Amino acid sequence: MGLDSSLHGGRSKESGSRGIVGITIKQRGELNDLIRGAHNDFIKPRLNSSAKRLEGMNKTLEEDLKTGAITREEYTHCTGKIKDLSRLQSKLQKLSPIAEKFL
Image (cartoon, rainbow, N blue to C red; front, side, top):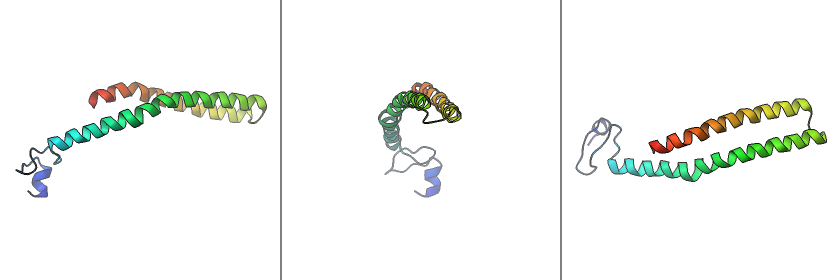
């Protein structure tokens, strides 16, 4: 089978049913397992721990401000950035269950 037919849903005795991009049903299942595993083993744990790390950073910044290790301006700048990251983390956390349903 040529490249053209595999890209356009062609069939071959040795490869089985092919989809639009030339991936067999078995390969698609394996790809889904790989993506699901990456989500469960890599992305999900990091999303869960990132909220705790961001809270820890805020506490450290508060301590640094109290001890004079950083200025009020530096504190405001850094906490603003952490707040932005917290919003992003929260959005990703909310999207995670939706992404799981697609896997």
